Image 1 (cartoon, rainbow, N blue to C red):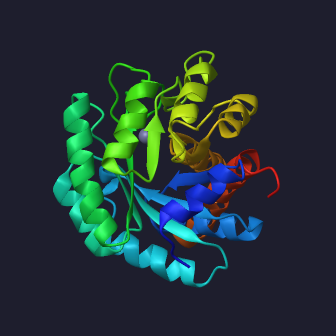
Image 2: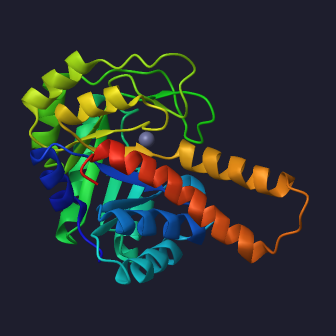
Length: 279
Ligand SMILES: [Zn+2]
């Protein structure tokens, strides 16, 4: 069943677990994410980014997720990942997404806050949740997302931002990166603690791929209620397909499609038990 993201995340923050937000690019990844969540009884966020509009349009992904979520027993949210375009956000809301992320993190603070508040007013009128970002998340290896200089989130600004814009979820920059880490992650739990003390809204960690389990769980104990995973879904699945194709056998494309679903499920389940150990 499809749900609004806000209620899912409030429960997660209150009960100190995180809901995984897994990026999808096609039907196989949608099935992998939703079926893995269903097998674990774990609520799931299907995330779709603007980068993948060449693969599917907003109405197509919405119809697929809606159909897939009807045959499972877990809450499923359909989330528009990092979006700078007002027009795309409105189209996603019309297409049936249940949450959107407006990414104004590259803008000056006041302008990011003002534009975010405008989006929130539109989205809330349609019962759609909004995530926004303050600070800027750095980039690692194999990332498919744009990245610039890393800027840690300012805790005092975070409180003003969330309150003024009436946000449902705040993405914070505390040292995780989009993509895989080049060295040891330097995640600043001290900053996270200050943000969590100032902001009761659920917090979001981007760059879940490759983040060590002890760091992830320390973040969850300190207010992180949604964790995004993108790069590892693609990396793991492509590596599995390479290994399969390297075997000296011929495959029908339909078989490869099923093995793709299984690979996605492996990644989702690995992270699900990390994000909510009671899974
Ligand atoms: Zn991100």
